[in-house]
Image (cartoon, helix red, strand yellow):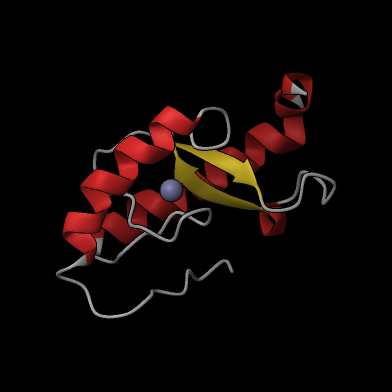
Length: 99
Ligand SMILES: [Zn+2]
């Protein structure tokens, strides 16, 4: 499973997504995690995940997600606590530009 992440196309896709996230943060835009919908904060570590496990390695099948969210429940729960506080100050769900 982890071997698929080593494909050149996926590495390129990850670079594109990470650039998009960085630029969005620089513009002060919200970057939501596609898995849980809570925000990925500037400086917070995150991964680039497949939207569809069988959807290929292209950028249209990739989106940022909180680090560890696709592997362990611990990361998800920790992120939820942090993000719930922030979410309380936000209004409504943010639709990511890549969704
Ligand atoms: Zn998340």
